[in-house]
Length: 237
Image (tube, rainbow, N blue to C red; front, top):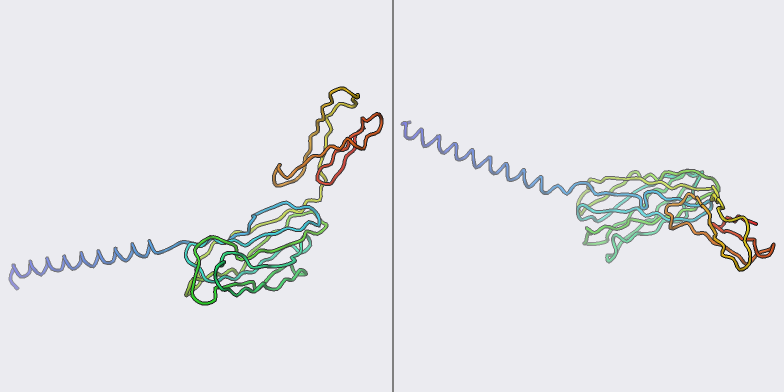
């Protein structure tokens, strides 16, 4: 092989190597860009406060990172504090023909198993929504129950996808509101009277706390009042 031919051969090898590197880099970019990431699955609301014997709902929510077609999950809870009443289909597959299995509730073990749903025939969804809504009833004991998802699976058209699961909790509050009356000890007909009280209760938001003043049940020349806070009553003379 002459020097000229060897030089041409080396140049050809360099060109081929560069082409191969470009092709490899191109496929690496496709792989990186094609990875949609984990699909979040979570209990909504993530935590809430309810009263003794109160009924409440949670939903199992999904924000698809890629188009999905079916799901399955199980959930556990503290059977000494709450009990499950029903499981109903969520809205994530609205607009499609679906099959939904509400699962098996076992309030003795604190589990709900074999909940699943899927789109029948062609179709998938990418918009956020709920897999299911679960109705619970609090019992007559205060405490905090975890709401733990397990054996969760979500598929696209062909296979299970990667997910990120976040659990929730519910607090059963058996404590009565605390009322501190700062009002004047007495008042007289025709005079201005300012009612003032500090009310503390274990609620999710101050907007959930209401204070009612009823002057219609008075005695002692109308100087008796009654304050009603969330069903608990404190009288003041």
